[in-house]
Length: 316
Image 1 (cartoon, rainbow, N blue to C red):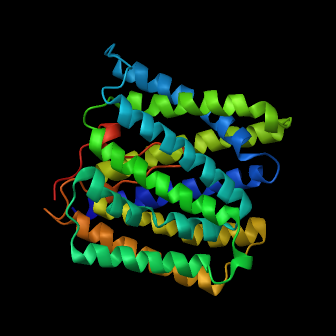
Image 2 (image 1 turned 135 degrees about the vertical axis):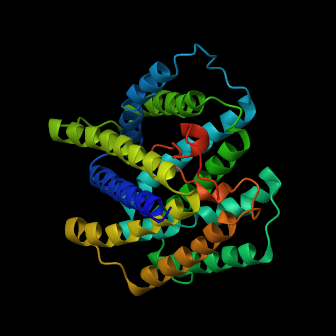
């Protein structure tokens, strides 16, 4: 069991490292192109994934959602999540973006009450409050000169990502994984395609290659996360996402000449601590019926979640 746990943690650390490189490429492209253009081509390059899943399933099932209302809401949330994340990566330092996005598990905990009917205990609510304090430390609303729409975009991305995760926990057992993957991709291609002429800038071959790296990175990271969830419990895998702060500091400094200030690092540490409390509490047997916070969505809006991927969780 110890070896399996270590293997799962290793796959997760590798997966989140790849996601960090993925986000760094998005940030680099964001210096030249609007987030709409980056999202359009990222979604377009995601269709081979759908084709592979359809080939793998090969059951001829319907692609019409069984829960159209929830699927539509999730689709909108996925689109908002990715668009705002891409904008945030291009507008503010990586470390600040990650610190704010790290609040996602805390928002999931709050949303799980009205949507999933969860009963959240005092300790998890205390963790949520602690996490919100961490977000305030990062945002520093008392110093409005430091705030920008990029910070708000990161917060919107965290909120919409939380909504995506909770909806997955609500309908994931009813909807086919390909349906949950297909509709956000289609919506992104159609809507961003309509907006593309307004913001489009010609892309040289090097930048098209960078977009290909974004797609390859997302698929590679997803494969690593699948193996992580297969090897170990979600409560072990999920907290590994906080390793991205290390990558954010390193990549930010080496590539983008960014040096996070003390407030960002302190706030990120507070958010990570509160999120870890949530993970540990929900990872305990009977602590949470749906364990919604233990699964996060990736940069493509696809959850490396056993419900979506057909991966059984290791019994606790």
